[in-house]
Amino acid sequence: MDPRKVIVCRCENVTLADLEEAIEKGYRDLESLKRYLRIGMGPCQGMHCLLFTAKYLARKLGKSVEEVYLPRNRVPLNPVPARYFIRRDWREMTG
Amino acid sequence: MKTGLVIIGAGIIGVMTALNLVEKGYRDIMIVEKKYPGSGGSFRCATGIRASFTSLEHVELMKRSIQLWPILSEKYNIPYARHGYVWLFTREEDLEMFRCIVDFHNKNGVPTRIVSPEEIAELVPTIKTDQLVGGVYDPLAGKASCFKALLNPLAYIIRKGVKLVESTTVYKVLIESGRARGVLTDKGVIEADKVLVAAGYGSKEILRESIGVDFGLRNIPKHALITEGYQRVFKPLLIDWETSSYIVQVLHGGFLIGSSLPEEPDKPPRSRLEYPVKAVNVWIRYFPWLAYTNIMRYWTGYYVMTPDHHPLIGPLSTVENLYIATGFSGHGFMMSPAVGEVMADYILGEKPGIPYVEHLLPDRIIKGRLVKEIAVFG
Ligand SMILES: Cc1cc2nc3c(=O)[nH]c(=O)nc-3n(C[C@H](O)[C@H](O)[C@H](O)COP(=O)(O)OP(=O)(O)OC[C@H]3O[C@@H](n4cnc5c(N)ncnc54)[C@H](O)[C@@H]3O)c2cc1C
Image 1 (cartoon, rainbow over the protein chains, first blue to last red):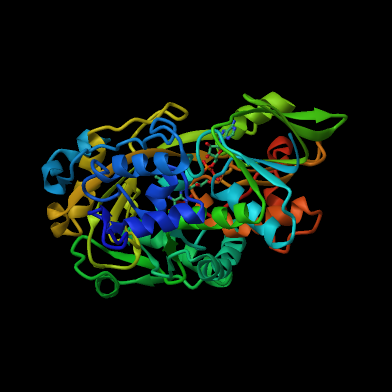
Image 2: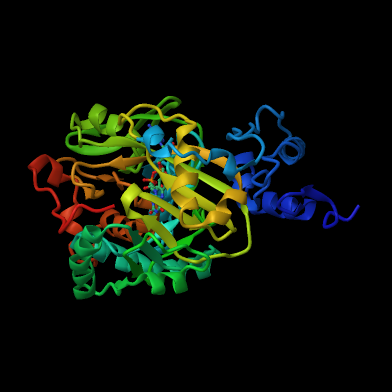
């Protein structure tokens, strides 16, 4: 399959060709790939793409998935509408 | 292991210093990083860049940085834009205080100006200005991608022969007859001719262990969140002076809101429900539509503060071949191009060309000669 047509990260529209090129350029750990390509930085927070990227990277470098280590997920795990945080007493609550 | 220069810490400061050295032909460098590059302050930052400070030291350092940012952006493909900053005031007395700050800026080549609520509405589409008495606009300020600013130069210097050693903690600098001769790490000794300590707050412990001096560094917790990405709504970074909170639509499109909560320094920061409450309520007063955006990520980090809120940069007079670059007090990202240049000069035994930069030598803390500001600010 044409790597330019395989989507690795749907939120940020990253293809397998982008991933291969980044690995070629020397971005060989998940933390760097995440920031360089924005894989896993969109609304799904890497739920799908990061695991795939980790497996792909591990195979490419001949390492185990544990060795290429997974980035930490940040709260909230799913995007939350800002309006849920509107409060009349916000000043008292936040000092 | 043996190398010419060990840089402790692969943050933006360590990487920019190495980049300047490589560009000057010095490549025998090993960067030793506790976790992974950017994992300290550098990847958590809000990407803001400005020269509108209240000391000559900061203003001159940042004027040089702002000359360098577009050059770096071009050479290493780092997204950067001069989108400006606007300070927003809801109280007359704040506006009054800023009149003399703007005077100071203008006298020193920083083109800030006082703006009316009407002008603010023009600079910042969709903003509600009903509670504003005025603001200050800095057209020279801007923002850059903190990810690309670190990763692209790093990939370049690695191709040029610089070694990056990750997941390795430095315990101390080894010193023999008044000279640095290497570092002790959790994986053994690395011998080196010169050592640069650029380890953020980690520098405190390293320096205490190595030379028994405490430079008074403090870690002040900061909170930040970002929404999903949207089309460009407004360009400048905005500061709500009354609540010390800022909002910036980063180059990728997300709205990043940063601020602090009343907290103890030096404690590990943690996520708290109060933070998104503060962020949202401060900024929906200006942008009611913000209520309909989605918050995607919330993280914490530190400002590594020095006693005078100015960085420690340069060699130490008491130990040869030992250099320090830390304590950026919340502004290390914007300063990194100029600091990298200055540190490379010091390490190669040249005299840096930026006015007043010698006032920032680390010795000043020991000698009690702190930097003075015209007003306490930001
Ligand atoms: C929320 C937030 C917003 C910010 N916004 C801005 C902004 O808009 N503009 C701006 O200019 N600045 C901003 N800053 C500040 C900026 O991020 C920092 O000043 C800058 O990143 C400092 O860079 P550094 O290289 O000195 O430190 P760091 O990036 O922290 O790098 C130091 C490195 O040293 C490593 N290290 C520590 N101890 C050891 C050890 N013992 N051995 C080996 N390695 C070690 C760490 O792991 C780390 O990677 C912000 C900071 C925060 C938290």
